[in-house]
Length: 484
Image 1 (spheres, one colour):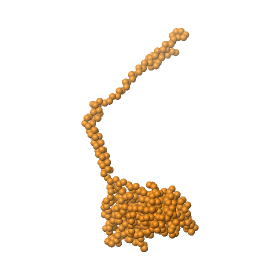
Image 2 (cartoon, rainbow, N blue to C red; image 1 turned 30 degrees about the vertical axis):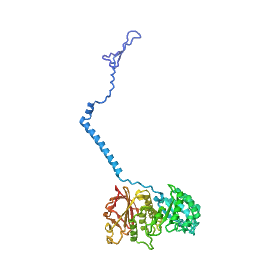
Image 3 (spheres, one colour; image 1 turned 90 degrees about the vertical axis):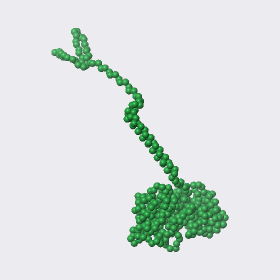
Image 4 (tube, rainbow, N blue to C red; image 1 turned 120 degrees about the vertical axis):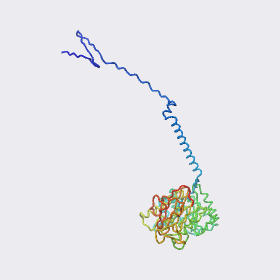
């Protein structure tokens, strides 16, 4: 039965009718509404804001003026600070670091190759020195002073090495290895029975030997102020030979060890030598007491150093703890320290942690000296003490008699705004420092090193206490130069 559906056919409906005939006809009627596309919006045109619009967005002319004045104020302040900084830099004293030659920066290390030998290793002393070069380099050593290489014949042959110590090829190998390690080598003639000045100068064999060793790379020669070579005529001739082999980066030197106590070299001789090594302590035929050591070092520190470049050695045999304290002084004084073999370690101490700490003290002192400008070429200010500036931890020694030299010694190395304070206690008791002993010093600092290698971090000088026979090195925080 055909169905008849009335009503709207709806969206997308199709109506079909079949007419008479076999094929019929199909009438299609679409009632789908036509979709009319919307018109595309016109592209927005960007235009700069007008003056009225800018004023309205900025909050009005009043706020614009305020912001302009703030910007102007900022630039004025910035330019004022820049000008003030430039004025401060220009007007403040600026120390110019002097150019130091290698012998002014180097730590000299005296040793005898014969000390490395025993009955079974006859003639192998030089070989043992070559094997110790890495160790010496780790200590911060810059120059070796080889002693006892030549036999003390009369007169000695300076071209031949004592066969009991080594051979000439071994010395040549040592010089080559030292050059690779960055170490200078100085041959010591001290205590040799050198000929008279005229014979030494006019002796062609001596001059030939000197030229030979200089050609092998020897950095210089060491003599004593008691030798016959320490004379005007000899030094003039030796200076001519050294200058022939010297270059700007590799200067050859004459190193003089002072053996006559309480005497100073003449100005002429001093002008012809680079280093005159003096002892921190006077020569004595007995073991120096703590008070004698304190008086001697205090006298030395309170004496002007002079214009000549100084060089220091300990000089006397001391107890090990006292020797470590004086090592702190020697490595921080102006000049070039000269250390003897074995002074960096306690020879009676077995290998172990304690011995390594002693080597660490020596290494820290040498490395600080090598890179700290204040210790290389800073000025020296001796800081004196009196009995009222010390307070002992012992109730029996709260004050010192007027005739007693305080066991506390201190000095300041200053370079620009960098200040390094060195304080040592040569006594056998702990002492605390009264802040009134040096009121111009800053109150804060940081430890660089100490004899016990047990002080680290920041320190307040008001709370500083020094243990028995202890030395410390402190870097101070201060702007401006210190004036005692």
